[in-house]
Image (cartoon, rainbow, N blue to C red; front, side, top):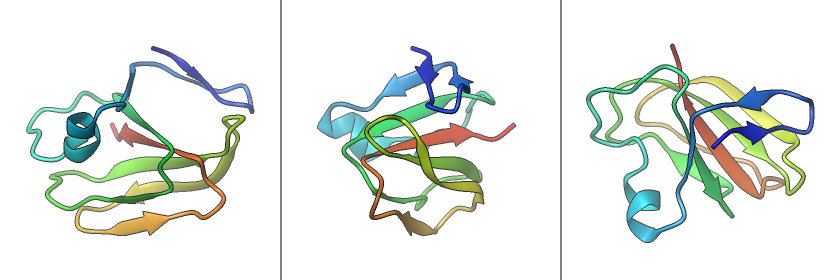
Length: 94
């Protein structure tokens, strides 16, 4: 799916992580990740990059898909959160 942000940006190649297993695994343990590939975690305001091999870009979104916090280069083995966020988008950097 393509996610439309409130500022007019479009994020293509978004997979919604709407099951326990998808939310649990996310990008962890994946060897091949295509640049621009993205995961949307509905109802999520805190994430980690444990067990990940690459840095990712993170967008914390409110209910209207407005970006309330952006991390351009979140490295492996980090934790990040945003109390105002209602969804989190993880994007493979490329």
